[in-house]
Image 1 (tube, each protein chain N blue to C red):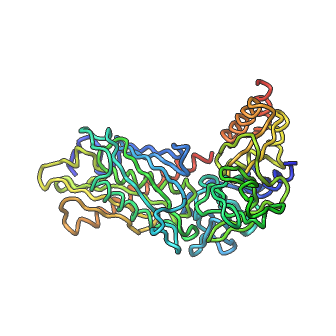
Image 2 (cartoon, each protein chain N blue to C red; image 1 turned 90 degrees about the horizontal axis):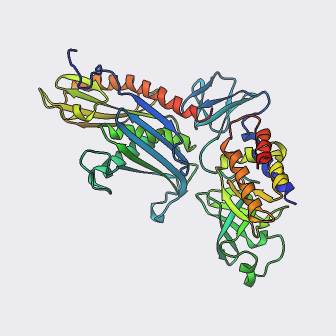
Length: 231
Length: 240
């Protein structure tokens, strides 16, 4: 591949990842995850009492996610508060995480996950999902596995991993496409695939293959960060 | 007078103390394979997946004979039967009290479980809204938690102050056979009751001794993973 990425990375190279667990003392579980300049923090509260009562489910506990870009996280100040975009991302984050959770032990309760993006440089939802997955584990919630998430981009005809803002705005050739992907670690089960742009159907298999590889790396970092709090 | 319940509380939490004799423990993340083979049985926090025993939660994996379990080290309080907890009265109903114990479902202390006879019309004189009470968990059901006050050291906590630590740090604060908490009691002259839910009540001669006890407890809670903690705390008291 002749492609030169704007920040000089190789096509299959992630940005520098940092992960830390236990950053918010008042939360039951918390974590920070960053891809380069994209920084996400997640806090987990609960299982706790669920209000309004009509949302309570006597069969199982429920998961409630809230994703928010903080006003200072982007170049032009973002108007604070929920938006159409943040509501959608909250919902897909919830769906990406729910398949690994087992909340049957906690009927009528809620697990709240708050995800805040401190700095945004594209791929914020994937960073948020990675942070939330670690925070849920840290909160001692019964889980089948961790969730790893990464974005795969297509710049003109070349596939790249973990797109940043400059690449998201790429205009040449076929333009830029990106897909946020989340999967259950060490398995072939995907919990989130969100395509933004155009892509040939036969390319998707390649994108997933790239995501698999990147998720292995991400999983190792998540695992290390979690185990670090026990030492 | 408090000794008894501290020891009981200690027994309930003993399995969570991180240094134990001869058992292998290692940090584990959810979904990680702990052991492979048919010889093992999954215990608390573990499950079987084909040939493997896999962790269902984050914590320390321990092999106790054939049983593999994962011990919780972080996260919110999980009530168990016979835990001694501290709570705050949030409502007085016609046949008991509702107690807030920092858990998702509500907990109920029936009138019948008070140690002496309480007249239904004078219930709020025995325990009113906002009072702090030490109680024992009688049962944990999906509908809620039932408490009892029958037992030594249980009842309303009068005077003093209450503060919170992480419930996972409680076993360390109590120490082996209550050694740590007894040390802090000796050095400060305070009465201390530690609830398994991480609520701690202290009452001393004066506020200064209470604050000293609180600082000591928070010191222990902060340094949860260091060895020789008792010596460190003794040193800390010597400096004060």
